[in-house]
Length: 313
Ligand code: UDP
Ligand code: MG
Image 1 (cartoon, rainbow, N blue to C red):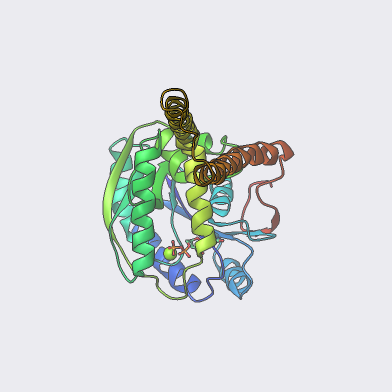
Image 2: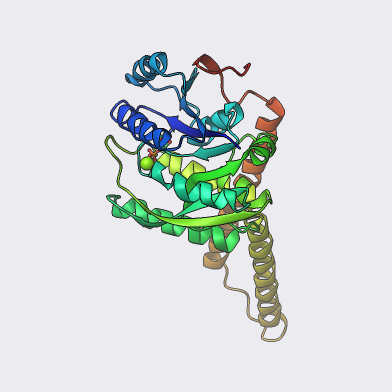
């Protein structure tokens, strides 16, 4: 084991690239026994990220850049990087320096102990909005209740893994990737280290509400059968209740000869059940939509050009 690849997705991060690169260089200089690759995936940035990356790559062949033709989102960009990385040890990391790259010491120590996957779990989140912290909490709680997989709470995509894990991960061909779920369920010997998550070095979060919701729905639909169970539970409740109601109506009719007073309850049930049914049709639709997308088998990303990457694309 003598090569370490840092894999970082980058979307409109012109303000942090140089600082990130400097921090990685400092680390590389203190580890003489390893060769380094800094693989940055430019996820269709619209700012000057591409220019900065190309300039740095020209002067340093350790810095490899994969320029994607369009923005495909954090998970796909990260996956593209994992596919291209050549390290014996690979470390996926955000470029905004919220994940301190200096944690490499602990990662390498664990891998030398024989672990194949080392997750970094956040103890705190500095400088993040109340909404971000709150939504993350709800998200991880919800997943831990609904998911069949043992997902690790408060664990993002900052982790180290060996070459054999990298080779296994790239065999996962699902369209809507949720890498945290894939890593948690892939097996091998895994370990967790804890760290304090820093605030963003500069710039703003690229995860807007829409991207967060889409990640949450990918996590739920890919790693939990809860939505299907929910349909079963609610529909059972519904028809049980309607049977009760029917019994009540029959008793009123045949024992007390009172006609069933109707309007309000009919309208209520009509609207209520139609709503529930539509909701479930939409749920089934989200699975069918995924089958459709998987059937289309479009590429996850298109490569525009690369710098310092020897691998064929
Ligand atoms: N990112 C990306 N594509 C996107 C959105 C984000 O490659 O469409 C990258 C971004 O540059 C950063 C990482 O994914 O390196 C995490 O994004 P961000 O820091 O904005 O998310 P947060 O930490 O706020 O959850
Ligand atoms: Mg961030």
